[in-house]
Amino acid sequence: MYRNRWTTTLYKKNALKIGYRSMTWDNHIPDAIVVQANLVLKTENKHSIRQDARQRLKYRKSTQPIGCACAGSFFKNPSSELSAGYLIEQAGLKGYRIGHAAVSSRHANFIINLGQATSQEIEDLMHFIQEKVFMQFNVQLQPEVQIIHV
Image (cartoon, rainbow, N blue to C red):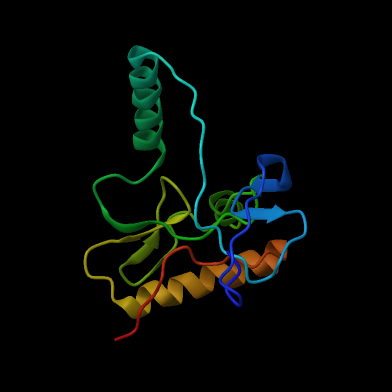
């Protein structure tokens, strides 16, 4: 749908290029919005789906901070090949803390509240991480979380 004209156009799947956090299509119009998509899903047996879900959950529990106060994944991955967690870890920031806000020692893309973290401590830690990663790797990390000041 084109916002400036409120008209719709149907695109075939081969006209769309869908990637990690991106989508482009042939004859791209800048203010277009996708309002509907028809998906075709493959069928699997229930046992296979449950097994896959269990494995993914087990992996998540072993690699992410479970049971502590955090907002989940904090920064967007710069690309599908390069994760924010990897860059933060390579910058030596696992376990780094400002006040009661800390980079998780289990997964570097999680900022955890050690009990009494203030929003200022979390923001300061976010900026410190961004600065350190940029200085070391020339990559600007973008927050995945939305910070709302009230």
